Image 1 (tube, rainbow, N blue to C red):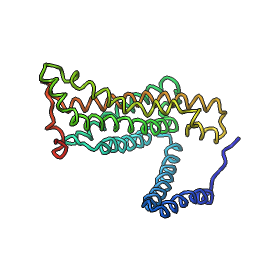
Image 2: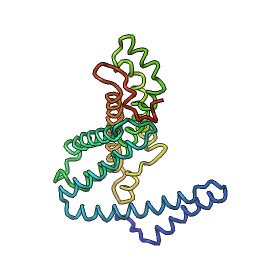
Image 3: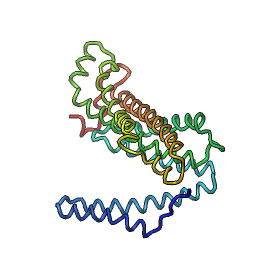
Image 4: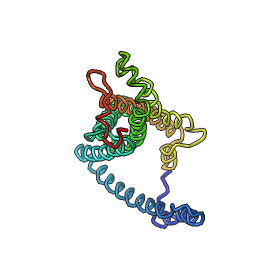
Length: 268
């Protein structure tokens, strides 16, 4: 069974639902109609552009083109990780934490799954590599940004307790441990919630797309299980990585709290 092809008129009809939401916003004076319409236009332009780019990349199956697409995706994800927390580390610290977390987590999890469960031929097959990276980056971005935000905002809130423990001779890791655990927990919980709801409360998007495309539902379920486990592992690594990298920036070799490494406006 082949997938049902969609044309421009089908998308235009679906856009009526966006217009309906915009009308509701106007009626209730929510002031969201402009943002909603702009977001809809951006969705169309971005996804169609990505679709045409991927069509060319898939057709040539070039390792260089695949690597370029993945590098751009990781760079944009790292930028989002750095930008989302309200607090900032000085000297572009947020950018360094975001870049190291995104790149290391993406490479580790992608290479692991490509060399174990999937094993495409060739191993750099863009259909698998780009698709996997695109799915994982959403989870990595979310987990890393939540964990980093928890560390940077929490260190100001817990400053007194942290400095008291350091003054009593505790190591930086021990003094930060409650904040570190809470920050990592914030980053991992969304993936746990997603796994708990999958199949009972919600039908995940990947599985839905595969079923619509004609794949056997049981086989689609296997792929979705694989991806859910992959996303959970990537979220855990990203949350832990962002938290520990922030910890290293906020302390020094003498186990001192270095709030001077926070951006001036955040050092209250």
